[in-house]
Every structure is written in structure tokens, then in C-alpha cells.
Image 1: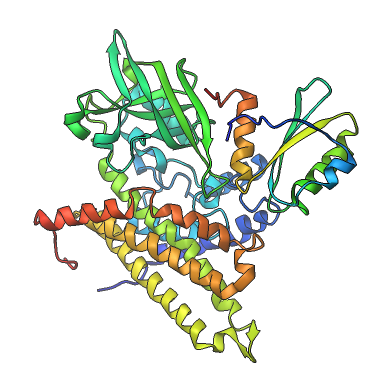
Image 2 (image 1 turned 60 degrees about the vertical axis):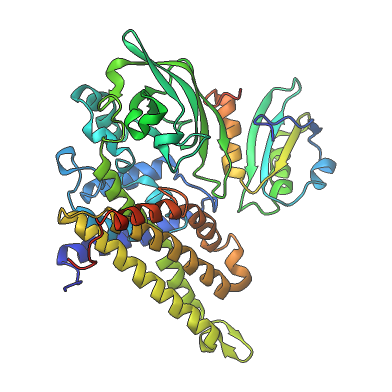
Amino acid sequence: MSVRMTKPWTDLTDENVARLPGQTGVYEIAGASDEVVATGYAGGRSRFGLRSELADRLTELGAGHRFRYEVTVQYLSRYSELVGIAAGRIRPA
Amino acid sequence: MDLSLSYEQQSLIETVRRFVRERIVPLEDDLDPDASELPEADHERLAAETKQMGLFNLGAPAELGGPDIGTVTTSLLAIEMSQHRAGLYTPCYGVFGSAAGLAQLFGATDQQKEKYLYPTLRGEKSGFFALTEPSGGSDPGRSVRTRAVRDGDAWVLNGSKVFISGADTADYGLVFARTGSLEDGRDGLTCFILDADTPGFAVRRVIHTLRSGHYATELHFDDARVPAENMLGELNKGFGVANELLTRQRVVYSAGCLGPAYRAHEMAVEYAPQRSVFKKTLAEHEGIQWMLVDNEMDLRTATLAVLHAADLADRGRPFRTEAAVAKILASEAAGRVVDRCIQIHGGYGVTKDLPLERWYRELRIRRIGEGTTETQRMVISRDILAARHRPVLR
């Protein structure tokens, strides 16, 4: 597993979000020019895991964004890793 | 033999038990089930309360502002403080202070104490402890390969560390490096205080394990220069620093394993008479009764072993063997107890609705952390074979 999230981006739309799994995991959301505007996780209290979390983000951010995600039960440590990389506290080789 | 608790001990236990149940547990209803941190405002409010209670920085010696309550009482409180969902690895989310994890700093120079220890005790700075390497952690005398070479007024560190908690958010770390030859074993290791912003030092990744909230990291040192005055203790005597304090902490660590097990057992005892199956409550089934009996035996045996080691420590008697026995018994018994409690709760036992599944995952790590069961057995067998073994009662 790469330390940075490297999956391809998907358009953040109702249709794509509806296809997401209800599992726990982490996600990143990018704006029009690929810059990450949000990092988050679907944890143990998420209603329908990644699906409901990203549905909430879509409502909040509106159209014109893209997302990528990873299913993982270690969602908190993976989330901390992604945030640490963004903040420069974790520097992958 | 009087095993009864003093009035002071009973009073402290009651105070901490109430604090956990009234202050900590209700907050967990709103946190992620794997969370290891409180919102900052809650943390500050509760830390202020523990300071007012005179129980902040439990692991610190009295001369450094610790409450000076001895290892027995500290162990009893560790059992209480860990009786909530995150309690095993972050008892009360650290609102009782974090002094215990950096005991080596208690023996630091005055200058080092001013820069690192006192701000840590005040909660203004945090540090990490870096010993384990990719080549191993149980036998650091031979497994530490990170090298420190003297260069003018500094030491230059090269190497890597794994399974290090808190390094990505810490201000400094205690890093063990080889300054002698590999044949020197432990006598070739020196401890250094490394500032987290030192060029050449990097946290490379999070190591994802069974526990999600309180995670470990991988560190790299690439010509990281540490000022000579940041050597902690003597050259090649990194392990001489606070050795006895670390053994004491092993006793308290063992006690901490028991808190979630006590709480899980309590939950099972409450649940068994309520749930019915095959026209009887679970409590009326002999199979369940025996699980509860096995829990009771495990908890009593492990608790006595922990308190025995703690009592010897407080009386200034040798207690290394007893600390190792306590570590094995407590970490393994607690795992068995929580496993049985999950079985009694059935499907709900493995859901995140209850804390049992988190305790089950995290307790598995306790058989490895702070010296594996097998390492503790080696400690005990060495003492037996070197005729340092003593009767249990003395």
C-alpha cells in the first residue's frame, strides 16, 4: 500500500456516491485543479460508511469536485497519516 | 497477611472510579469508537480537574510534583483509569498527565530538565520513546543498529526505528543509538534527546496495526545532528537511565491491562441474567456460569500477582521476577476474560456498539508490548537459574 493515496479521482456525483460501499474507510476530495480540499473518514459511527459520509460531503461542497477513497478498518490511523502528510509532519521516502 | 486497602487507597479508588464513569464514559458516546483523543476543550477542562484532585502526573516522583502515592496505589488507580473504551492505551485520554512514559528524563541534567522535562510535565511539550528497530525490539542490546558518531560538538545519527508512538506530533524524542560495538550489547547504547525539527530526521509513515486510534510510526535518521549536550545520561549507558523506574512502570502497565477486563466481566455479569435462550437466562446455563468463574479466577490471580510485585517495589525489595510474572499473567488473563465476555454477549460482543471488540483487539498487543510474554519468561528463567530466585513470600 502506498503511503500517499494514489487511486484515480472519480467525479463527486449522486450517482457515483450511491455506488460506494457502506464500509469504514478514508477519502480525499479534490477541487477543479486536483488540489485536495478535504480529507475525511467513515468511522464506526457513520450511518452507511463511506457512502453516507461522501453523500454528506457532496451536499456540503456541491458539484464540481472529485473524490477517491480506500476501504480500511484502520480508518483513524490512515486518516492521521494522510493529514500528517498534508501537514508535512509525515514525509514519505 | 493483610490485603485490605487503606482508607486513603479506598478513597482514591472511589474518586477515580467516579471520575471515569461520570466524566469520561459519557464523552465516549459522541466520539468515534476507535478514538484516542478528546476534543481540546474537554481535555483542558478535565486535566484542570485532575490537577485540582492532586492526581496529575501520577508517574512523576514527588520532587517533580507527582502525587507520591507508591506503586501499589498507582497500580490500583491504573486498574480504575483504564475502565472505559479507550482506556487500555489512553487511560482517561491522558488527562492525568503523561509523565510516566518518559521516565528517563527524570535523570536528565538541569538544563535538559528545563528544556524538555518541565514543559512536558506542564503539558506544553510531548516526547516520543524510540528504541525498537526493524531488526527487533525484544533484545535491544543486539538489535539496535542506528549509529551515533561524534562529530565536533554534535552526534550524527543514521538509521531507522519502527513502532514508535506519537513521533509525528511530538516536540522531541528519546532516541537510543549504538555508540559502541555490536559485541558490547546494551553497554554500547546511548540515549539522545532529539528535537523533532532536526534536519535529517523524518517520520516516514504510520504503521497500521490492530489499534486504529493510537498508532505507531516509522522513523528515519539521515545524518541527523544532535548537540552533544543532548546526550541523556552517560555514554554507552543508555540503559542505566531509570532502569528501576521502567521496571516499576511494567507493574503499572500490567495493572492497566486488568481495567478493561474487570469492566468486561462486570458487563457480562449484568448481561447474563437478562438475556434468555432455550427457556433459560444465560446466567442459568452452566456453560456461561463456568465462563464467569474462569473470569473470576483469571482476574483474582492476575491482580494478586500485580499487587505482589508492586508491594515489593514499594518496600524496596527486588521485584524484577515478580514484575515479569505480573506482566505475563495480567496481559494474558485480560485477553482471555474479554474473549469470554464477547462470547457471552454473542453478536453484539463484536460490534462497535460495545467496547468489547476494541479491548479484544488492543489486548492482543499487550502480550507483545513492554516485553513479550516470551521475553518475560526469559527474565524469570534467568533469575531462577542464576539462583536469584526467591520464595514467593518474604
